[in-house]
Image 1 (cartoon, rainbow, N blue to C red):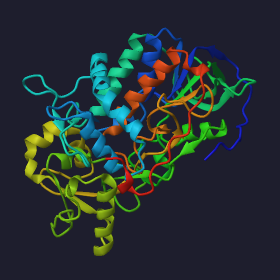
Image 2: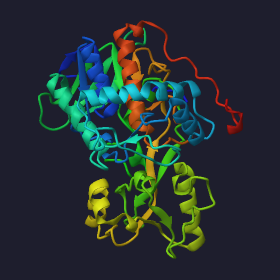
Image 3: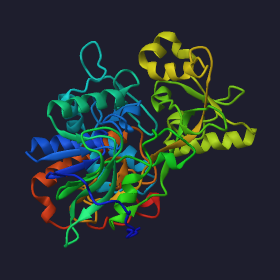
Image 4: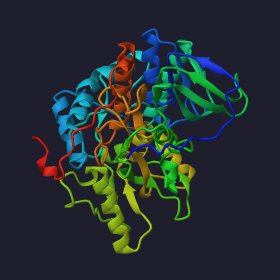
Length: 438
């Protein structure tokens, strides 16, 4: 899919900032890219639609996937990712992700993120859907995103990195050759800048997150409205796989009329042994997939939907009463608090759940260095389509993708890569999942 050529009408910029790089978005991908660019000596500005920590990253519960455990390997992580992607992953992109992932997580820890560890100081790892091994590192039990966001925002503040908050990016600026030369934006509310302005920079990194608010029920925060994809299309960039919107199987059911952001019940709850059951207490995932409740998300979401239709039910249940109060309070305090806030106590009763929109697997098409088809424009995180996720993202690969490809973008810009060609076409994925390379 190619750009629309549509431009937004706005007043001429009333103020401007000059930089080498402008990053649009402040989640794990955007802030990692900004910190790496700054470390390389590049004048970097971060622009974000709300506050620095208001994006999707801080809502991530389960954790970040990487082959960090004893006996685990990038090849095993690769295999699980390809299966979850239903034959539509770019294997080279996945191999890049899983190979560079462990070191990227260690660098995140070096930045100041504190993950849960055992008494001996080793990372505690859990399982989620589609993973055959425990490879999900987590923080605060089920508050991984909060911790990652805290560490990165703190690092940005410590680096005195220039930021513009409460700013909606309107359009990409281009020069006479069609290369990026910055962005125009509208700062909303009080701040150092106000009204329509511009950040002039030869490199623009889109890290604007997803578009979950397109759906009536979603796990996404209010800021996830697809701005980055729209901006890229207006600039003439190509996008791919927008049809692959992942629905999370276990979102707290708040009623058929509930709209907007709904509380997520992390897949890690099932990874620790919770069961999906219907109103009669029957575990309906048994026999449907070898991993039962830990099958890839698309399989579990469809199974829940089928069971709901068969029984004329509005939701199914997640039963983790056998965890006991102590485990709920230490391992899943965020989810426990959210459930109790809605009158449900997971310690004593099953939790009503239903699928809801969760993650955009497609987005602005990039190559392995994060380059889009517009010269000077990069994309990373959920707004990008790197080819890693295929038709269905493997659980907890999202934070890892943001880390790995943000670092690759920063390295490319620092090496002067913008002078080279833009994203090359990705090889066509096999139509038949069975045709994937072994």
